View 1 (cartoon, protein in one colour):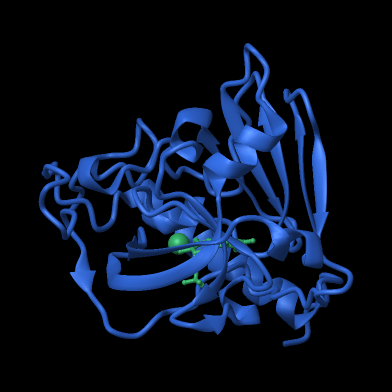
View 2 (view 1 turned 180 degrees about the horizontal axis):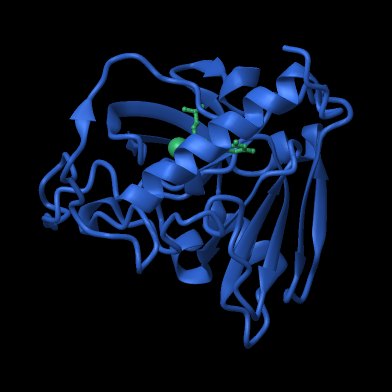
Amino acid sequence: MAEDDGKGVVGRIKDKLIASKQQWAREGRLLTGHAAPPAQRLPPGQREVKNWPVLDLGVQPDVPRQAWTLGIDGKVAHPRQWSWAEFLDLPQVALTTDIHCVTAWSRYDNEWEGVSARHLLDLVQPLPGAAHVIFHAYDGYTTNVPLERFAEADVLLAHRWMGEPISREHGGPVRVVIPRLYFWKSAKWVKRIEISEVDKPGFWEVRDYHNEADPWKEERYSDGVQDGAD
Ligand SMILES: Nc1nc2c(c(=O)[nH]1)N[C@H]1C(S)=C(S)[C@@H](COP(=O)(O)O)O[C@H]1N2
Ligand SMILES: [Mo]
């Protein structure tokens, strides 16, 4: 291609990926129009896969463990930052959960190890008025959830999957895991957790994806996007 927009090949591929995913949202692709109760393991419109697909913006940051830090700040009494060694010294939990990606694949029985969100919240102590959580990642990605979602018992800051360190492509050293929401809410390469009084819609949330992202309510795309199109 002769055109030179100054972005380079990677930048152009990335723009294309983002544009096509945003187009899915605009067309309401994959919507069945049916809600399902959470008692049903497979949410509506999903299919089970055995592999683990990689989805991101095409940039997979290489964060050496000795340079890695994770911080929590914002509307909290005790902002904190952990080095890799300090993070491993926090109480560790193991949890087996399912993944539900908005692109319609679900992967059952993922064994995670890491630190529970509840424990981190106990340490930093959200202040009155704290209502939202915004994840900031090493690749510049952001995503947002209500504080009560982050505080659910099955939410982890995970560094191991199926007994191995989480690979770089899947968000290692540490990624968020929020099993009861579509997987785009589970930030890979997480670096900073901002506790906020106001909501700050993240990368996909400002690109026509749903702010709440409950798979059993099929909250794939934002209001205004047509239901069950074509
Ligand atoms: N930092 C970061 N986290 C991210 C993304 C990203 O691009 N950057 N993509 C999200 C999306 S859209 C999905 S579906 C999952 C994919 O995680 P996986 O590649 O481990 O399957 O990560 C989410 N977390
Ligand atoms: Mo995704």
